[in-house]
Length: 537
Image (spheres, one colour):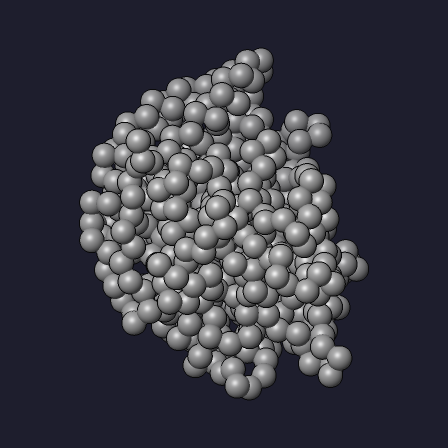
């Protein structure tokens, strides 16, 4: 079976839905999502979206905060594009129906998060992402030219490789013609041809054992582009959110938004001692890489499994009103945050690298765009400034839409694309081979490629991964397609990219901290952290 569209969108978070709305007036659009359309990382975003709205804030302040947080590795042109376009993109989102909290004066109630010099984070209580996701989905579902295929999984994008041509990373004209799509309900694989394709598949959090990401975050888009010989970069920069709720039986980990610290909550040890002042003069509102390393260090010094977030001093009614989801969640496991400290640990949260794109979200593969967490625009550098990610998606999906429309008329649908070849494949009845390999992979990444790294750990991780890779490829090439085995392959691809790029970076920078290299200090605020490499005896 074949389907044909002008635009193919892989993923239904803020990046994919925004792009779909931008191009829908110029052709037919198909959105592929591997579960339900609202099951995205966007929906789980609590804190908000950063944008310059009022004085004394300014574009220059936001630009500087972003570059400082990115450890001077951000692309300044991209930062300027993103920040200077922020206000217009937020206004458009509001016109689509998004509701952000306001003060009695009618102005937006802007929050302040780690690394920000001003209050500039728009929010909807503590479930901003859900408000944005449902707003965009409502707009998409009202549009007659957009079709959403839920419970469908994209196996691979289609390029010249599938026409029998040799494609390498040096090939200059790699072109995307669409994708092979797996229908999870009837188990059929069909060819979907498109003139333009947008990859907006989100992050890679599930390469780690502890993550705030939903289970769907398996790096599918990044792996697809890497297999298609597209350019991927900066995968070593994995942001660990400093404060996920410590609840070992729960996965994904429940996020305790950074906005709570912006509201006045204080990080403390289990014994009730403040510690962030030892690491950074900005204290609990230092950028995430610094806070996560500090927490990791305190846990190693004390031998404790978590630290605490104390908001007992905050007005009870204000706390519950601003953070109802967090209050209810903690209460559900027996913690009343108005008179008890919240146990928290760092958790894998956000990939700052990904598919390399230009300022129009174009990848190195013709007719293929990428936006959102799967893309590396150059905005984040070595570390993401809090609440810049939703903004990045809005800006670059908008820009991708402009570029797609401009170039659409010059592109014809490719003919004579072969159907997916599954001849000789058999059903794999030993699911244990897949589930246990995923656990093994996550353990390797968590213990060897986490917040603090070393050359020895990275090499050990790479050696272990090589075995897992060979076993999985052998299984994949003789088994019928299933989502689980495809996700495992994608996780392995992403783990390899993270490890290899971490090994290639001969310095400690931003989110990549190695005990084998001295920390490069790139701004006036950051100071060296004395990392304890192992727990006390």
